[in-house]
Image 1: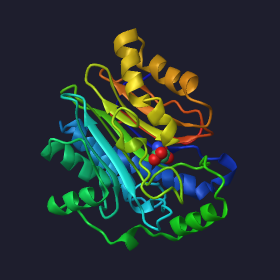
Image 2: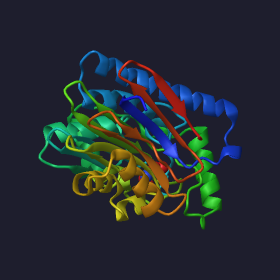
Image 3: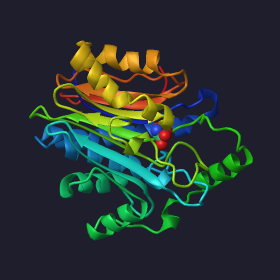
Length: 301
Ligand code: ASP
C-alpha cells in the first residue's frame, strides 16, 4: 500500500441506489479539491494543522456535504454546527459545539486550540468567540439550501426514524514533513430535525476526532452517540499504543468488531504514513493522497 500524507472523508452511510450519479461525481470532485489544497501545503513544507484546515474548509463550503454551507437543519429551525481539531505533536485540541453563525466552524475550533486554555466552547459562547476572533460570520440564511430545507421537511414527516440513512460529516487527517499528525472533523450533526442542543462526536475529542504523534490521527463519521459511547477515535490510538496492533488492525477492530453494522466509518493515518479508511455502512465518501501526489477518491468499494 502506498504511504499517504493526507486523507479526507465526507460522510459514511449512502444508500447506493438513492444517490444520483452526477451528485456522486460532484462529491468526488470536492474531495479531490480538498486533497489538492491540503497537498499543496504539505508538499511546500507546511504543517499538518494548516493542511487539514484548508481541506476541511473546502468541504465545509461545498453544499452537498453536511458541514458548513450544506449542514442539516435542527428542529429549532437553525443549523447548529459541531467541529473539532487536534494536533498530535502536543495533543492540543480545540472544538466548538452548536455554533450557528460561523461560515467555517473548523477555523473557530482551531482558534480555540491556538488562543485559549479551553478545549470546547458551545453555542452562544462559541458564536461570541468567533466574532471576537474576527472569523468569518454569516447570517443564518446562508445555511438554508433547497436541499437542507427539503430534508428537514422529510425528517419532520418521518419523526420515528432516528437512524440516518445518509450521513455527510467531513474530516481530514494529515502527516507533515516534520512528522506531525493532525485530525479535524466538522458536521451539521447526525440528521435533519435533530434535537435542538444535541452535541455529536465531531466536537468530542477522543470520540470523533483524535491525534497523537506516538500513534495516529483519526477522524470519524457516523451515528455520533455510538461513537461517543465507544470513544472510537481514541480507541484506535489506545489499541496501537497498549496492544501493539497496527493502524489497520486497530481501525478495523473498532469499526467491524466494536461497532454495530451501519453505524459509520473513519479515516486514520499513522506516523509512518500507513492509512486505513474502514466503514460498516453501504459507502463512505473518502480519498487519500500520497507523498508523490497520487490521489484516489471512492464512495463505495
Ligand atoms: N457523527 C456526526 C454526528 O453524529 C454525523 C455524521 O458523521 O454524519 O454529529
